[in-house]
Length: 168
Image 1 (tube, helix red, strand yellow):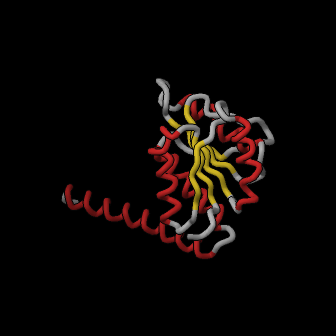
Image 2: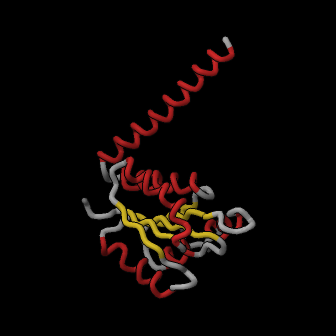
């Protein structure tokens, strides 16, 4: 197996069901990843060390998912110059809105690319990581082009089915 280029990290192992979607997307593009748990609040020193050492391990993009206060992506971004993609996890009565706001509302100078709440966001985080890596990899870029074509073909098929169903 090749060396991981993307690190998927989450604030709790209870987030794994959602963050697995990022892993599935990366697998589709043949991108090696690692996956771990660290917490901005419960293990702040571990989180800072993880972020500072990620580039040295060959990581090029970090995907961070967290619920509630959802400071994980921001804390990681504060300790690295690698691109960080935040995935808001719906873990409270607010259904992820709190996580979304905590992830997206970063101060100037500490960017976190933030995707949608939950599984769709985790999928998009994996695809966005692939797009970042595709800037310097023709093989990944080619797989991304095929992915877009597959999406377009799916819409065309649904359109045909609908026209047949409606008799138009």
